[in-house]
Image 1 (cartoon, rainbow, N blue to C red):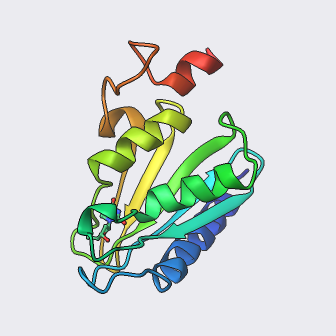
Image 2: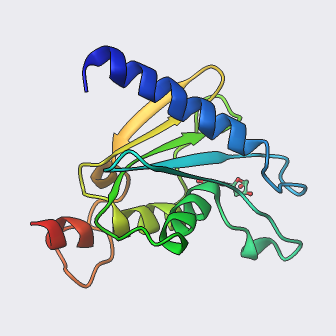
Length: 147
Ligand code: THU
């Protein structure tokens, strides 16, 4: 993929993440988040946060997107990157629970990008959760399985 195609793809991913945030069920926080996971074959799955009156049951946008992909039959070695929209300044980083779930499926150097209306930040999975809990200590489960 050349630079122009990459820029175009990124713009489309961001637009999808922002669009899905509009489906968020966030009556308690009023903080609608959208996330898109990109697969190695180019397919995409999106998700939004879904809150609950029992607050701790809330599911974040990132986990909704990943779980939707798994439920659709995507295999664990197919996850390439994550794009997140947060309605905030600065763009917020994913929560700890989502970092652990991201570490389960994505390579240690997979890109995670978070953007808002006025900001954009990016990391690799290993920056967000160094030494993630894993039954394969020393690296993300995904990196070990691929390695
Ligand atoms: N939220 C996400 O969807 N993703 C994150 O990484 C952090 C937080 C949601 C959960 C809750 O519905 C709202 O944002 C405020 O915490």
